[in-house]
Length: 283
Length: 123
Image: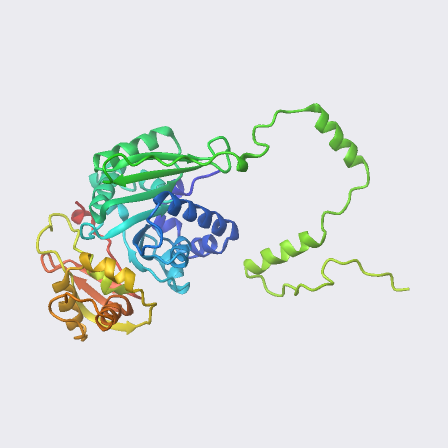
Protein backbone atom coordinates (compact mmCIF):
# COMPACT_ATOMS: atom_id res chain seq x y z
CA UNK A 1 0.00 0.00 0.00
CA UNK A 2 1.38 3.40 -0.88
CA UNK A 3 1.48 5.93 1.90
CA UNK A 4 -0.23 9.24 1.18
CA UNK A 5 2.21 11.11 3.40
CA UNK A 6 5.00 10.17 1.02
CA UNK A 7 3.17 11.59 -1.97
CA UNK A 8 2.65 15.21 -0.95
CA UNK A 9 2.25 17.39 2.14
CA UNK A 10 -1.24 17.08 3.71
CA UNK A 11 -2.58 20.46 2.63
CA UNK A 12 -1.81 19.54 -0.96
CA UNK A 13 -2.64 15.83 -0.85
CA UNK A 14 -6.05 16.55 0.63
CA UNK A 15 -7.14 18.96 -2.07
CA UNK A 16 -10.77 19.43 -3.03
CA UNK A 17 -11.29 16.08 -4.75
CA UNK A 18 -9.33 13.97 -2.30
CA UNK A 19 -11.03 15.61 0.70
CA UNK A 20 -14.45 14.83 -0.69
CA UNK A 21 -13.47 11.31 -1.70
CA UNK A 22 -12.04 10.64 1.74
CA UNK A 23 -15.15 11.87 3.51
CA UNK A 24 -17.63 10.04 1.29
CA UNK A 25 -15.89 6.70 1.43
CA UNK A 26 -18.03 4.56 3.72
CA UNK A 27 -15.09 2.34 4.63
CA UNK A 28 -13.08 5.35 5.76
CA UNK A 29 -16.09 6.57 7.71
CA UNK A 30 -16.39 3.25 9.49
CA UNK A 31 -12.69 3.02 10.31
CA UNK A 32 -12.57 6.62 11.51
CA UNK A 33 -15.62 6.08 13.70
CA UNK A 34 -14.21 2.90 15.24
CA UNK A 35 -10.90 4.54 15.97
CA UNK A 36 -12.54 7.63 17.43
CA UNK A 37 -14.58 5.51 19.82
CA UNK A 38 -11.48 3.57 20.77
CA UNK A 39 -9.50 6.79 21.28
CA UNK A 40 -12.26 8.14 23.53
CA UNK A 41 -12.15 4.90 25.46
CA UNK A 42 -8.39 5.24 25.92
CA UNK A 43 -8.87 8.87 26.91
CA UNK A 44 -11.04 7.53 29.73
CA UNK A 45 -12.61 10.83 30.68
CA UNK A 46 -14.71 10.77 33.82
CA UNK A 47 -18.19 9.65 32.74
CA UNK A 48 -21.14 12.07 32.66
CA UNK A 49 -18.92 15.09 32.94
CA UNK A 50 -18.84 17.62 30.15
CA UNK A 51 -15.40 18.14 28.67
CA UNK A 52 -13.72 20.47 26.20
CA UNK A 53 -11.59 18.46 23.77
CA UNK A 54 -9.11 19.23 21.04
CA UNK A 55 -9.30 17.25 17.80
CA UNK A 56 -5.88 17.43 16.18
CA UNK A 57 -6.13 17.00 12.43
CA UNK A 58 -9.91 17.09 12.52
CA UNK A 59 -10.17 16.99 8.73
CA UNK A 60 -13.73 16.96 7.51
CA UNK A 61 -15.07 16.38 11.00
CA UNK A 62 -15.66 12.62 10.77
CA UNK A 63 -14.37 12.17 14.31
CA UNK A 64 -15.81 15.50 15.40
CA UNK A 65 -19.27 14.23 14.56
CA UNK A 66 -18.78 11.45 17.07
CA UNK A 67 -17.58 13.92 19.67
CA UNK A 68 -20.78 15.88 19.03
CA UNK A 69 -22.84 12.73 19.43
CA UNK A 70 -21.12 11.88 22.68
CA UNK A 71 -21.93 15.34 24.00
CA UNK A 72 -18.45 16.84 24.10
CA UNK A 73 -17.63 20.40 23.18
CA UNK A 74 -14.59 20.51 20.96
CA UNK A 75 -12.28 22.57 18.78
CA UNK A 76 -10.49 21.14 15.79
CA UNK A 77 -7.38 22.09 13.87
CA UNK A 78 -6.36 20.95 10.41
CA UNK A 79 -3.94 22.12 7.76
CA UNK A 80 -6.05 21.29 4.72
CA UNK A 81 -8.47 24.09 3.73
CA UNK A 82 -10.39 21.69 1.50
CA UNK A 83 -11.00 19.31 4.38
CA UNK A 84 -12.19 22.17 6.58
CA UNK A 85 -14.51 23.31 3.82
CA UNK A 86 -16.10 19.87 3.78
CA UNK A 87 -16.38 20.07 7.57
CA UNK A 88 -18.23 23.39 7.22
CA UNK A 89 -20.63 21.84 4.74
CA UNK A 90 -21.29 18.98 7.14
CA UNK A 91 -22.12 21.53 9.84
CA UNK A 92 -20.12 20.08 12.70
CA UNK A 93 -20.47 21.85 16.04
CA UNK A 94 -16.82 22.38 16.92
CA UNK A 95 -14.70 25.44 16.23
CA UNK A 96 -12.32 24.91 13.34
CA UNK A 97 -8.84 26.32 12.86
CA UNK A 98 -6.59 26.28 9.84
CA UNK A 99 -3.32 25.47 11.52
CA UNK A 100 -0.08 23.60 10.98
CA UNK A 101 0.38 21.53 14.13
CA UNK A 102 4.12 21.39 13.46
CA UNK A 103 4.23 25.15 14.07
CA UNK A 104 2.78 24.71 17.54
CA UNK A 105 -0.42 25.91 19.16
CA UNK A 106 -1.18 29.26 20.71
CA UNK A 107 -3.70 28.01 23.22
CA UNK A 108 -3.56 29.29 26.77
CA UNK A 109 -2.24 26.82 29.37
CA UNK A 110 -4.78 24.32 30.63
CA UNK A 111 -7.33 25.03 27.92
CA UNK A 112 -8.40 21.49 27.11
CA UNK A 113 -9.58 18.48 29.10
CA UNK A 114 -8.10 16.09 26.58
CA UNK A 115 -6.99 15.70 22.97
CA UNK A 116 -7.55 13.08 20.31
CA UNK A 117 -6.00 12.73 16.92
CA UNK A 118 -6.85 10.11 14.31
CA UNK A 119 -4.35 9.23 11.55
CA UNK A 120 -2.35 12.43 11.75
CA UNK A 121 1.04 12.07 13.44
CA UNK A 122 2.63 10.26 10.49
CA UNK A 123 2.22 13.45 8.47
CA UNK A 124 4.67 15.19 10.79
CA UNK A 125 7.45 12.77 9.90
CA UNK A 126 8.30 14.18 6.49
CA UNK A 127 10.24 17.34 5.84
CA UNK A 128 8.85 19.62 3.15
CA UNK A 129 11.76 22.03 2.94
CA UNK A 130 15.29 22.40 4.21
CA UNK A 131 14.51 25.23 6.60
CA UNK A 132 15.60 24.19 10.13
CA UNK A 133 12.09 24.70 11.51
CA UNK A 134 10.66 22.15 9.09
CA UNK A 135 12.74 19.19 10.21
CA UNK A 136 10.50 16.46 11.67
CA UNK A 137 12.13 16.43 15.14
CA UNK A 138 11.82 20.18 15.44
CA UNK A 139 8.18 20.15 14.35
CA UNK A 140 7.35 17.25 16.68
CA UNK A 141 9.04 18.96 19.56
CA UNK A 142 7.20 22.22 18.95
CA UNK A 143 3.93 20.31 18.60
CA UNK A 144 4.29 18.27 21.79
CA UNK A 145 5.54 21.12 23.98
CA UNK A 146 2.74 23.50 22.99
CA UNK A 147 0.19 20.69 23.28
CA UNK A 148 1.48 19.80 26.72
CA UNK A 149 0.91 23.30 27.96
CA UNK A 150 -2.52 23.55 26.29
CA UNK A 151 -3.78 20.51 28.21
CA UNK A 152 -4.98 20.61 31.76
CA UNK A 153 -3.48 18.58 34.60
CA UNK A 154 -4.45 15.75 34.89
CA UNK A 155 -5.48 14.83 31.37
CA UNK A 156 -4.63 12.58 28.47
CA UNK A 157 -3.99 12.83 24.77
CA UNK A 158 -4.57 9.86 22.47
CA UNK A 159 -3.15 9.67 18.97
CA UNK A 160 -3.86 6.93 16.48
CA UNK A 161 -1.23 6.91 13.77
CA UNK A 162 0.47 4.80 11.12
CA UNK A 163 4.21 4.65 11.74
CA UNK A 164 6.19 3.02 8.95
CA UNK A 165 8.96 1.77 11.22
CA UNK A 166 9.90 1.24 14.83
CA UNK A 167 12.37 4.11 14.55
CA UNK A 168 9.49 6.48 13.96
CA UNK A 169 7.69 5.24 17.07
CA UNK A 170 10.92 5.66 18.99
CA UNK A 171 11.39 9.21 17.71
CA UNK A 172 7.85 10.25 18.53
CA UNK A 173 7.74 8.78 22.03
CA UNK A 174 11.14 10.17 22.98
CA UNK A 175 10.18 13.69 21.89
CA UNK A 176 6.83 13.41 23.68
CA UNK A 177 8.63 12.40 26.84
CA UNK A 178 11.01 15.32 26.55
CA UNK A 179 7.98 17.59 26.27
CA UNK A 180 6.85 16.34 29.66
CA UNK A 181 4.33 13.66 28.78
CA UNK A 182 4.13 10.26 30.40
CA UNK A 183 2.60 7.22 28.74
CA UNK A 184 3.47 5.20 25.70
CA UNK A 185 2.25 3.04 22.86
CA UNK A 186 -0.84 0.82 22.93
CA UNK A 187 -1.21 -1.69 20.12
CA UNK A 188 -4.61 -3.14 19.30
CA UNK A 189 -4.76 -6.53 17.57
CA UNK A 190 -0.97 -6.84 17.30
CA UNK A 191 -1.19 -10.18 15.48
CA UNK A 192 -3.33 -9.02 12.62
CA UNK A 193 -1.90 -7.14 9.68
CA UNK A 194 -5.21 -5.57 8.80
CA UNK A 195 -6.80 -4.80 12.14
CA UNK A 196 -3.58 -3.74 13.87
CA UNK A 197 -3.91 -0.20 15.20
CA UNK A 198 -1.27 1.80 17.01
CA UNK A 199 -2.24 4.37 19.61
CA UNK A 200 0.07 6.75 21.38
CA UNK A 201 -1.42 7.45 24.81
CA UNK A 202 0.12 10.41 26.57
CA UNK A 203 -0.59 11.37 30.16
CA UNK A 204 -0.18 14.59 32.04
CA UNK A 205 -0.11 14.49 35.81
CA UNK A 206 -2.32 12.10 37.75
CA UNK A 207 0.34 11.27 40.33
CA UNK A 208 2.71 9.91 37.73
CA UNK A 209 1.43 6.37 37.98
CA UNK A 210 -1.51 6.18 35.64
CA UNK A 211 -1.75 2.56 34.50
CA UNK A 212 -1.10 2.01 30.83
CA UNK A 213 -4.26 0.80 29.08
CA UNK A 214 -4.08 -2.63 27.44
CA UNK A 215 -4.35 -3.17 23.72
CA UNK A 216 -7.23 -5.21 22.37
CA UNK A 217 -6.58 -8.78 21.35
CA UNK A 218 -8.44 -11.71 19.88
CA UNK A 219 -11.73 -11.70 17.95
CA UNK A 220 -10.74 -9.61 14.97
CA UNK A 221 -7.87 -11.84 13.99
CA UNK A 222 -10.00 -14.87 13.00
CA UNK A 223 -8.18 -17.03 10.50
CA UNK A 224 -5.11 -14.81 10.33
CA UNK A 225 -2.85 -17.33 12.02
CA UNK A 226 -4.49 -20.54 10.83
CA UNK A 227 -2.20 -23.22 9.52
CA UNK A 228 -2.49 -24.57 6.02
CA UNK A 229 -4.47 -27.78 5.98
CA UNK A 230 -4.78 -30.00 3.00
CA UNK A 231 -8.08 -31.46 4.15
CA UNK A 232 -9.83 -28.11 3.81
CA UNK A 233 -8.61 -27.57 0.33
CA UNK A 234 -9.98 -30.92 -0.80
CA UNK A 235 -13.40 -30.11 0.57
CA UNK A 236 -13.46 -26.82 -1.21
CA UNK A 237 -12.60 -28.32 -4.60
CA UNK A 238 -15.35 -30.85 -4.13
CA UNK A 239 -17.81 -28.13 -3.35
CA UNK A 240 -16.76 -26.16 -6.36
CA UNK A 241 -17.34 -29.06 -8.70
CA UNK A 242 -20.98 -29.23 -7.65
CA UNK A 243 -23.35 -26.65 -8.96
CA UNK A 244 -22.68 -23.47 -7.01
CA UNK A 245 -25.50 -21.90 -5.12
CA UNK A 246 -26.07 -18.22 -5.87
CA UNK A 247 -24.65 -15.96 -3.19
CA UNK A 248 -26.80 -13.09 -4.34
CA UNK A 249 -29.60 -13.77 -1.89
CA UNK A 250 -31.89 -11.23 -0.26
CA UNK A 251 -29.39 -10.25 2.40
CA UNK A 252 -26.70 -9.66 -0.15
CA UNK A 253 -28.98 -7.46 -2.24
CA UNK A 254 -30.08 -5.44 0.80
CA UNK A 255 -26.48 -4.97 1.82
CA UNK A 256 -25.49 -3.74 -1.61
CA UNK A 257 -28.42 -1.33 -1.81
CA UNK A 258 -27.61 0.04 1.62
CA UNK A 259 -24.04 0.59 0.50
CA UNK A 260 -25.14 2.43 -2.67
CA UNK A 261 -27.42 4.67 -0.62
CA UNK A 262 -24.60 5.47 1.76
CA UNK A 263 -22.41 6.43 -1.15
CA UNK A 264 -25.15 8.69 -2.41
CA UNK A 265 -25.89 6.79 -5.62
CA UNK A 266 -29.13 7.88 -7.23
CA UNK A 267 -32.08 5.68 -8.24
CA UNK A 268 -31.46 2.89 -5.76
CA UNK A 269 -34.76 0.93 -5.79
CA UNK A 270 -36.78 0.86 -2.59
CA UNK A 271 -36.74 -2.23 -0.38
CA UNK A 272 -39.97 -4.18 -0.27
CA UNK A 273 -41.12 -7.68 0.40
CA UNK A 274 -40.50 -8.45 -3.25
CA UNK A 275 -36.82 -7.58 -2.95
CA UNK A 276 -34.64 -10.49 -3.95
CA UNK A 277 -37.60 -12.80 -4.53
CA UNK A 278 -37.74 -15.10 -7.45
CA UNK A 279 -40.21 -14.27 -10.18
CA UNK A 280 -42.94 -16.80 -10.69
CA UNK A 281 -43.13 -18.38 -14.12
CA UNK A 282 -45.69 -16.53 -16.21
CA UNK A 283 -47.90 -19.53 -16.81
CA UNK B 1 -16.98 29.61 13.62
CA UNK B 2 -14.70 31.44 15.99
CA UNK B 3 -16.75 31.43 19.12
CA UNK B 4 -15.68 33.45 22.12
CA UNK B 5 -15.05 30.22 24.01
CA UNK B 6 -12.09 29.45 21.77
CA UNK B 7 -11.14 33.07 21.33
CA UNK B 8 -10.74 33.21 25.10
CA UNK B 9 -8.19 30.39 24.92
CA UNK B 10 -6.25 31.69 21.98
CA UNK B 11 -2.97 33.56 22.28
CA UNK B 12 -0.51 34.54 19.60
CA UNK B 13 2.10 31.86 18.84
CA UNK B 14 4.54 33.79 16.70
CA UNK B 15 8.22 33.28 17.53
CA UNK B 16 9.33 35.45 20.44
CA UNK B 17 5.86 36.82 21.04
CA UNK B 18 5.43 35.66 24.60
CA UNK B 19 4.07 38.55 26.63
CA UNK B 20 1.01 40.72 26.16
CA UNK B 21 -0.05 38.35 23.36
CA UNK B 22 -3.56 37.77 24.69
CA UNK B 23 -6.38 38.39 23.95
CA UNK B 24 -6.24 38.75 20.19
CA UNK B 25 -8.16 41.81 19.03
CA UNK B 26 -11.00 41.38 16.58
CA UNK B 27 -11.01 43.62 13.54
CA UNK B 28 -13.66 44.26 10.85
CA UNK B 29 -15.74 41.36 12.10
CA UNK B 30 -19.11 40.17 10.95
CA UNK B 31 -20.88 38.02 13.49
CA UNK B 32 -23.65 35.52 13.29
CA UNK B 33 -25.80 34.16 16.09
CA UNK B 34 -26.44 30.44 15.99
CA UNK B 35 -28.37 28.72 18.71
CA UNK B 36 -26.64 25.96 20.63
CA UNK B 37 -27.76 23.51 23.24
CA UNK B 38 -27.65 24.94 26.77
CA UNK B 39 -25.47 22.85 29.05
CA UNK B 40 -25.15 24.41 32.54
CA UNK B 41 -22.80 21.70 33.83
CA UNK B 42 -20.32 22.36 31.08
CA UNK B 43 -20.41 26.09 31.77
CA UNK B 44 -19.91 25.62 35.50
CA UNK B 45 -16.87 23.45 34.81
CA UNK B 46 -15.55 25.92 32.28
CA UNK B 47 -15.82 29.13 34.30
CA UNK B 48 -12.51 28.63 36.19
CA UNK B 49 -10.67 28.50 32.87
CA UNK B 50 -12.05 31.78 31.55
CA UNK B 51 -9.99 34.94 31.50
CA UNK B 52 -12.94 36.99 32.60
CA UNK B 53 -11.72 40.46 31.71
CA UNK B 54 -10.73 39.40 28.21
CA UNK B 55 -14.11 37.77 27.68
CA UNK B 56 -16.14 40.75 28.87
CA UNK B 57 -14.04 43.23 26.91
CA UNK B 58 -14.35 41.21 23.74
CA UNK B 59 -18.07 40.68 24.22
CA UNK B 60 -18.56 44.44 24.70
CA UNK B 61 -16.49 45.11 21.62
CA UNK B 62 -18.83 42.85 19.69
CA UNK B 63 -21.83 44.70 21.13
CA UNK B 64 -22.96 42.33 23.88
CA UNK B 65 -23.18 43.92 27.32
CA UNK B 66 -25.05 41.17 29.17
CA UNK B 67 -22.05 40.06 31.24
CA UNK B 68 -21.02 41.80 34.49
CA UNK B 69 -17.48 43.18 34.85
CA UNK B 70 -16.70 40.74 37.64
CA UNK B 71 -17.75 37.10 37.63
CA UNK B 72 -20.60 36.80 40.17
CA UNK B 73 -20.34 34.61 43.25
CA UNK B 74 -23.73 33.06 42.71
CA UNK B 75 -24.25 31.32 39.41
CA UNK B 76 -27.95 31.80 38.77
CA UNK B 77 -29.73 30.60 35.69
CA UNK B 78 -29.99 33.97 34.03
CA UNK B 79 -26.27 34.57 34.32
CA UNK B 80 -25.49 31.11 32.94
CA UNK B 81 -27.86 31.71 30.01
CA UNK B 82 -26.11 34.99 29.20
CA UNK B 83 -22.73 33.33 29.49
CA UNK B 84 -23.90 30.48 27.28
CA UNK B 85 -25.03 32.99 24.66
CA UNK B 86 -21.75 34.91 24.70
CA UNK B 87 -19.47 31.87 24.78
CA UNK B 88 -21.18 29.45 22.46
CA UNK B 89 -23.73 31.20 20.27
CA UNK B 90 -21.84 34.22 18.95
CA UNK B 91 -19.90 33.14 15.89
CA UNK B 92 -17.41 35.42 14.20
CA UNK B 93 -17.68 34.64 10.51
CA UNK B 94 -15.40 37.13 8.76
CA UNK B 95 -12.71 39.57 9.79
CA UNK B 96 -9.38 39.13 11.48
CA UNK B 97 -7.68 38.74 14.84
CA UNK B 98 -4.72 40.95 15.61
CA UNK B 99 -2.05 40.18 18.19
CA UNK B 100 -1.79 43.19 20.53
CA UNK B 101 1.96 42.64 20.90
CA UNK B 102 3.46 41.76 17.52
CA UNK B 103 0.52 42.86 15.35
CA UNK B 104 0.40 39.55 13.53
CA UNK B 105 -2.88 39.37 11.65
CA UNK B 106 -4.82 36.09 11.72
CA UNK B 107 -7.46 36.43 8.99
CA UNK B 108 -10.85 34.77 9.51
CA UNK B 109 -12.69 33.65 6.44
CA UNK B 110 -15.83 31.58 6.35
CA UNK B 111 -15.61 31.26 10.10
CA UNK B 112 -12.20 29.58 10.01
CA UNK B 113 -9.23 31.51 11.34
CA UNK B 114 -6.00 31.03 9.47
CA UNK B 115 -3.38 30.35 12.13
CA UNK B 116 -0.56 29.49 9.71
CA UNK B 117 2.72 31.29 10.24
CA UNK B 118 5.37 32.31 7.77
CA UNK B 119 8.70 30.51 7.97
CA UNK B 120 10.49 33.27 9.89
CA UNK B 121 7.71 33.42 12.51
CA UNK B 122 7.97 29.79 13.57
CA UNK B 123 9.52 29.26 16.96
